[in-house]
Length: 268
Length: 221
Figure (spheres, rainbow over the protein chains, first blue to last red):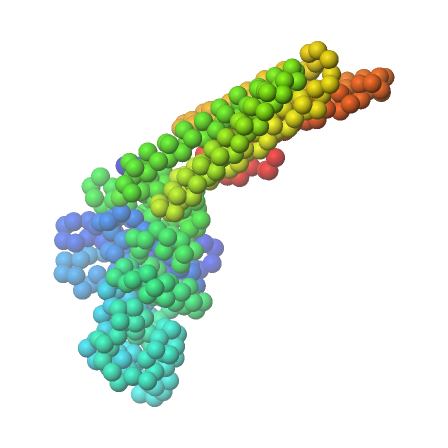
């Protein structure tokens, strides 16, 4: 398992990346969770992060919008650049980062408020006072939920089905017009039909939002993503990037034998 | 299905492909014997064997579909299953060539005595040798060795092509000089063509193995 990652196994792009990590390591106290990850997230693409359980996928994802700041003892080395500027730089407000780089979690987590208030929450907090109704409708339409909820916007969000709640969380995220959405296994708690709706939505959103998605579902990664990063733990249980490339390479002809072993189910 | 079960099913699939290859090989030699002796019973046996080959091809391809459906395989596993599917198809066509050769034996049944089938056995030995090496490459786990075996098969195809061209030239000359030989010569040409196609399809299998091992498609044969 202790094979060095060959640089030619890591895809790079000529165009400026919307997000870029440089030698990114994350520690929880004295424990190193991920080590030296450098990759570019190209604008307008869906990037899948895959790898065995415990390899640091979620840690990596959460470091892309400073969500790890909320974990006591978490510490970051290296850097994450958003539009070329460090999101960990002095004076950068993590809340501002999270509006630009939104996040959708594994289990839908709507606020115990009305459907309308859930979507209006972000813009209101940002001081938006006008056109809130338009923003809510636009966001719900973008999340493919409008037709299902337009007649009950004042109902509790908690009355929606799991799939609808997850699309509501995506609408809530979209309402503040992020450039990037991070998704941590967004369909893992949903049935196949609701999963299909979320996947269709991801492909549709990719037209104007960059998406980074952590998924355990290999078929899902192939269906929604154009690029995939494979993370794996080394013998010290520290996650590292072993291959980054187009999904047809990762799932068709992987360059690293560890990727082949993982995607074919021999390890993990 | 656990990984060990998957490996077991994949191993069974490979064994079924090799069994199909063995059936094709023996049917092919029976067909050559049928043309040499013009024995109707042997030709009938080739027809029955070809039905078995068709059935075995269906069985292999059904197993491929089942594995793909249950396992959603990717990468090397997927290429291996797709290769098995493709190789089964190539082998089934070779069975058809054997049946074609056996039919020629029946068409030539009015010829007295044993027929001089010229260099057909030598060509057949080389074509079947290519098939054996192509299937050996399919079974080979070592990537480098598999590619070497596959490339050796591809290089042998030229030799069979040359033998076919030589025989064709000789048969045409003989037909020009002896009109009584035209019917026999035409049928022998047909048989030689079928043997040459077996070599071509063995080359297809070898190219398929290269794709399976490396993930890179070579040019279609």
